[in-house]
Length: 298
Image (cartoon, rainbow, N blue to C red; front, side, top):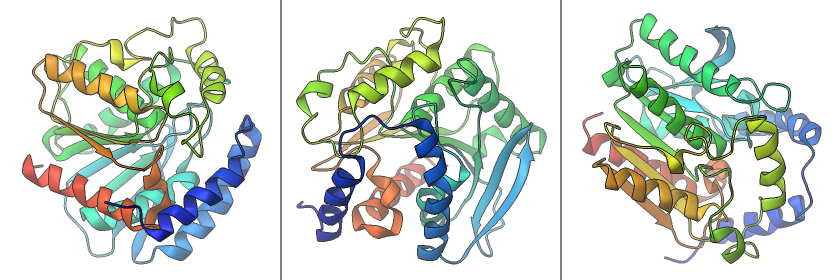
C-alpha cells in the first residue's frame, strides 16, 4: 500500500529537521515542551492527570468517560537519554482514544546522569505500584517505542525472572533491542531513515550501559531467553535502521514458544507512530494494536 501524501510530507520535514546531525540531549529535551503544546492542539477529548507513581513523575491519559480498569503502561522512547510525558503526548493521546483504555505514562530516570539499571528499576517500581493500586496483571499491557520498546521487553523479562505476575501482553513500536548495533539494517536502511542515526545510537548506548556489557539481555533483549513471555506484538518500519532489532526479537521469542506477531510496515521509518493524528498510517498502526489486544482477550 503506497504511503499517504501526509506521511510523505512529514518524512521530508523530518529529514530537514534532523539533517543527519548528532542530536544534542539538551536540544532534544528542550524541544519536548513545544511538542506537548502542539499535541494537545491536534488531539481533543482526552483527560490528562499528572501524578507521582512510585516516585516517578507520570500522567494518566484516557478518553473522557472511560472508567475501565484495563491499563496500558507506556514506556516512552528517546534513546534512554531523552523523552518524557511532554514528548510522547502526541503519540499517546490518539493511542488512548483508539484503544479506549487508560494509559499510564511515567518518566523514568535518564542517562547519562542515571545509567542502567536506573530506567529498568523505575519501570519495575511503577509496574508494582499499579499492582498495589489494585490493578490486576491480566488487565495490564506493557508497551513502548524505541528505547521504551526495549525497556518493555526488559521489564517483562525481569518480572518473569523475579516470579512476579506478568502483564497480559507486550507491544513494541520500533524497539531498540540490540544496543550492540549488530543488525545489518543499520547499513541497509541508513539512506532511508529520516530521523535516527547509528552514530547517535552508539553514543546513547554507551551512556546508558555504563560499565555493563552492551550484550546484557536486560540491556539488549535480542540476547534474552523469552520462555514464558506473554503474547507479543512488534511493529517496525521497512525503512528503519532498527528493523533487524524487531526481527531478531521476534525470532528469539518465537523459538521460545511465545505467541509473536511481527508487523513490518512498508515504506515507513522509526516510530512513525509519533506523527499521531498527522498521518493516517499512525492511526492504522494503533488500530492494529487494538485488534491484537482484542484477539488475545486483553
